[in-house]
Length: 84
Image (cartoon, rainbow, N blue to C red; front, side, top):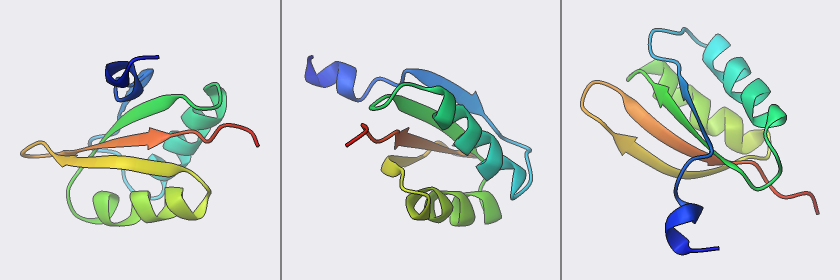
């Protein structure tokens, strides 16, 4: 597997305009549908969503690999852990 494919998301989820905690719930449900080790890109609004969702995902056992400020919204790259 090449390095570029490691940072290319397997799926995207646009949750701009979605309030907390619904955005976290939708992100978690989407991750649970994906194969272990896959990468999900999620778009979140500034403010409460970007402050709450990454911490909630980390506490739920997901790996937040990257947070990018995209001017007006944030892009999160979240890895579903491989099953140990």
